[in-house]
Length: 217
Length: 214
Image 1 (cartoon, each protein chain N blue to C red):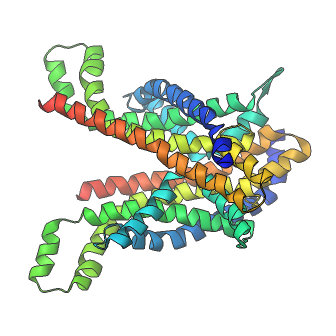
Image 2 (tube, chains in turn yellow, cyan; image 1 turned 45 degrees about the horizontal axis):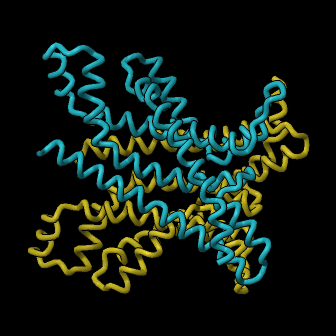
Image 3 (cartoon, rainbow over the protein chains, first blue to last red; image 1 turned 90 degrees about the vertical axis):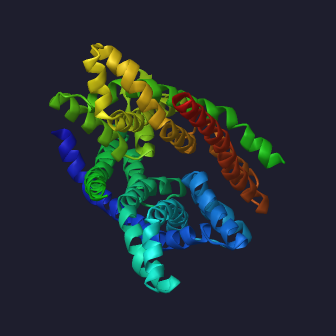
């Protein structure tokens, strides 16, 4: 019981931290998905320069740890006179991350659209533009949905790394509370529960969507 | 090149962390995968809850919980111990899910055929299901290993002196423009380190394909 009463005392501060986490996750997803679509088109473009640029952005965003990209934006870029607030740096780094991961999922989704669909729209005399926006994209994006939901969950959990650049998100809030009275066990358990309460149901919904999609194909 | 040698000082620790956690995961995921695909509802629910809970909490929280939260008598985790145990447990959960997916994708007929041939349950599982499942999941395991390699960077937040920690330290000592170098170097190093894993995985995969179809 003592744990519960202590948790109740921490909860208002923790909720403020969670709000910051959700804000960062929301922004990185909101900008990451459209950028991911652009990147997925760049990676499959005919023009070599465009393709190389797209590949570089995707491979760095996926290949380098999120923490490193975070540090690069927050500690690195100010040395060139480009300084961000910590929360802006976190949003930029995670947006890069989510764009890179979602681009791979969207590319796979777009490529999974049956070739016959392209041939059919070609035979119907649809323009390339219409073929892409009205035939390929709706079908491709639909099959990318579970993967994109997975990226969203990953981004939410990734916001915890913003602790490393002192963003007042959930993890940093927990650490600050813990370092006041040293009951780290309680506070980090509570932090873990806050993350789990959101991530776990989100994962279950994603699995549900995956199963439904699998049934339709 | 100072920055490069500074970052490289952390390389052995990064590799040690990654491989230790991976070893824990590869072995520890076996019983959990059996639980996840058990016909006993209680066993299935308990292992499912464990997997989802471990995966639902960010790694940094597990590391802080182990490093700062755990004290049994006079025992406390040192940073490296906390990192290995934390990353190891997370690996167990992720790999168990990969194992389960692999076992599930082996066609049901294989199990039924083995049963019809009078093979014991143990032989059916280890001699028929597991080898086929392994072929299916070996690329996913390789992908997970590269993910784990990157996740080991999170250990820097509990003062484990791996590559990212070293790059941070160098950047602090060189607050000029040069301070950005270690971050670029460490980012490139992670990408370079992932390449041999992808290469070996592809070779393993193509060799196994030959073994089946030859």
